[in-house]
Length: 242
Image 1 (cartoon, rainbow, N blue to C red):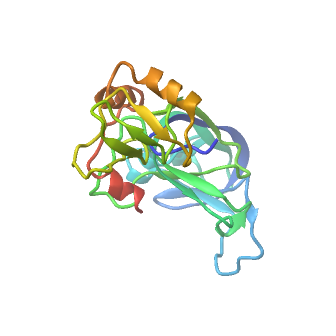
Image 2: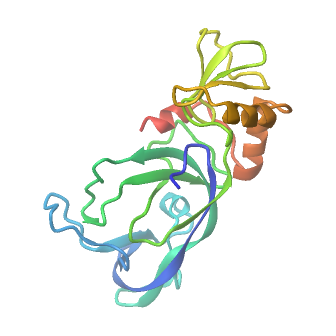
């Protein structure tokens, strides 16, 4: 499953044994138990270590997902420990797919990654590079469980009609395009599917009609807020454009 923007996920990764390579005032570097150096990328000199913030009050600690046991602030160079991701709820603010897979300096090369924020954190347009990335389907055994997907009954690119007869394109969780340029933020329910992937789809049309008989766009936002603990931000488009 490739997540999409707006998805609320439960993320975890089983802990693996490793050893501390070095310690600085700000972070501890541990040997990666998952990735290996990519010998065909000589312009990225990855040394095989993963840096993890030591100070729980720091921004790097709060945005990061990886944790060590014992905690990073208790470790010294040469210590043995484990590293993994304790179970945490996040929501997706960006998705990138790479074809061919991206050269990072380590193997395997990721074909996609998602940028996530922790439960309760909203997109802040004042913060550059907000969130942390999760590579999909690499050697790190990260587990992603979908908790909530806004507009789960729609696919990106669906053409629909709202209850007032306007035509719309669904571009993602909170990204609606009104073909008449009306400036209205989102369509009124119930929704009628016009086409999916350029074709009529009667079965999908019935499912969408049934899913939107009751409720509204604002109700869908409220359900997302309950699962993510966050709020919809005016800066969400900027976050996706990074």
